[in-house]
Length: 175
Image 1 (cartoon, one colour):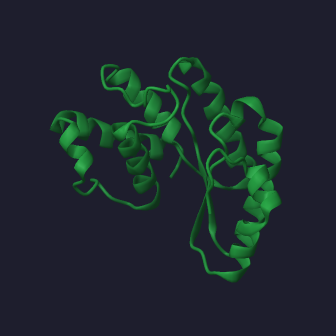
Image 2 (cartoon, helix red, strand yellow):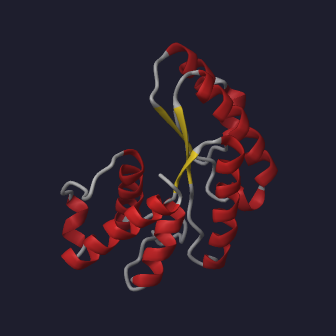
């Protein structure tokens, strides 16, 4: 139930998520606010995460928070993003999908591999693969990710490193 650039406030006001939560059975629901809201509009994000987490729990599902990553030109902001998501998880009981942690760590270990599209915000193919792997490790107790086309763009060493970084980020937040 996503539309580009939407905030959780916009989703809440639209009402479609709440309707779907009551009309259908869900095991897990992932909440993703607009990527920079944890930095620009934290109070609104906190309010709407609380609202959604309550509705998700009432529906009998587990809430997950999709932690975003810092913009390419502002890597230092990742610490504030992490703090915001950890605070939200503690306050609501939601689990964090720590994409931002994995992104930041992989970027430090392999700075020559660009996780970003040219806009410095959206993920490249490899960045998208990291996002998907972090989600997969957050939902499933697995040791490895099944083969995908993204593996063709990474060496075996880099692919294994990316998997380990994602798995470690998930274990770090208790996923």
